[in-house]
Length: 192
Image 1 (cartoon, rainbow, N blue to C red):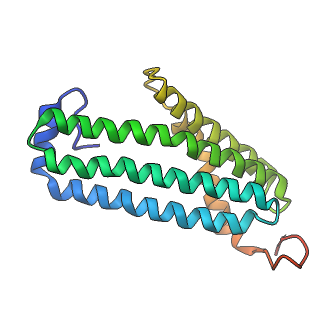
Image 2 (spheres, rainbow, N blue to C red):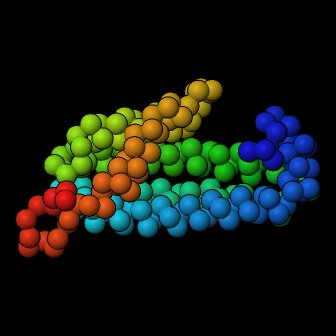
């Protein structure tokens, strides 16, 4: 974000040209997030499959499709490097990244809604955690739809509701690793 000056394509293009290494590092970091999204989708599929295989597959599928959309958005940033001498085309690439990514956030929001439901119904994840994950999903969904409809909102709802996503992450790291999933022939998962 420090490389982009909203409303000033010339300054943005010059800043990116002067900081190509930082820009490339940003692209690489975002690409790593795409890979991690797929890994997390597969881990959550395994974790929530005992609740509902079908819904767990849906949640994982939504996150993986979101990761693909995010990768397409990132490719727009990579394309900026080939046109960085042209301020208008540079800004177009930055705008394309933002538009594609924001549209993709609707998929991420849907993923969190399904995940919230699975967590709420699981019996091994606290029910309140499922509720706040679903609220996070609504935040991303709202922001994504508002972006696609070009409502011009300056406040992002997900900048507040994302806390549900973070709470799930923290819970999974602290308590979730104590859940015994077993195999399909055993009983329901339990928290040790």
